[in-house]
Length: 394
Image (cartoon, rainbow, N blue to C red; front, side, top):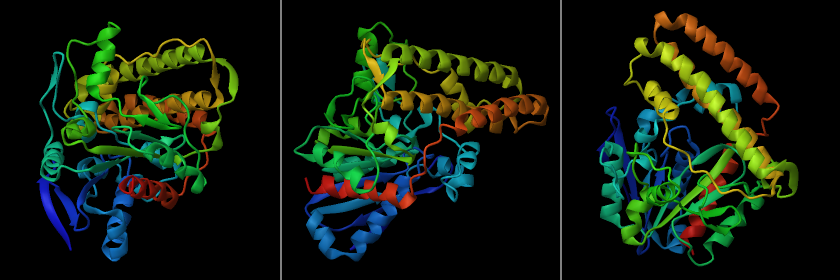
């Protein structure tokens, strides 16, 4: 039996819905759209729900009762709607891009109290997710994300049985490559190629304190994985890209030292943030500081110190070089676009809007040569679906 129930209300007044599907003795909680610029997970959740409802044999084989939240951040999704019907139009994607400030992200605003760093401003959407975790005590919890570019990679809340090896084997079956560059969180343990242990906020705080980089306060909270640890839940994130090529799995050495590559990336990041920060500061008196785009831009411009990995003394791989190039473009195009949209909100800012638009269009042109081939949506969703069913049978 399948039951659709309302589990909460978003900040913008949208209903938060969960589909409960009776099945086996174990429990799975599947959450789509924790980041609203990542809609592949909502597509995966829909296909999973359809498959489970239509196939009793599949439900028996997987051995779980399923609880599926198709979109946990409908308000943020609305701000990305303009490109949802053109997911591989790179210009449309970035020009219509919205990603919340860190302290507005559903995935990273669970309660936190660790070594003097606290976060209690949990969002209504997070409360709904937390209540589902506490009600269901899930054995398995896939949180469905997708990346802009790169290869496929995963995060697991714990190293369990042979699941990491099986996850690594999935992308080639779909004609995609693993992303064997550096993890998003330096220091995250590696369980199998492109399968990492989740590095939650407490671990990051510990790292920053040990390296003398801890801020006085923390702007966001903990993760869903960390919250569900008390129930021994296996958390799974399957990151699938919208654009990808084989370079992201090329472990052969480049001619660039990795430490030098990291220094270049840091310098480029600081230069980009300087440009964006100068424009934002000039516009500050004419914008609503509480608007979604203002909060997102300001948060990135004042973000907490990044975790700096230790020096290596080795050459960067070709995969790491490709990843660094994409990081440069993503920072420019994501936050440049959101700043352009923010400036368009006030006629008094039209001259500044024209200036920022000119800069942004130059960044667009520079990114074209580095754009990898598009990944069909059904392929990206298929990998996530395969990852979920694989985890359910391990």
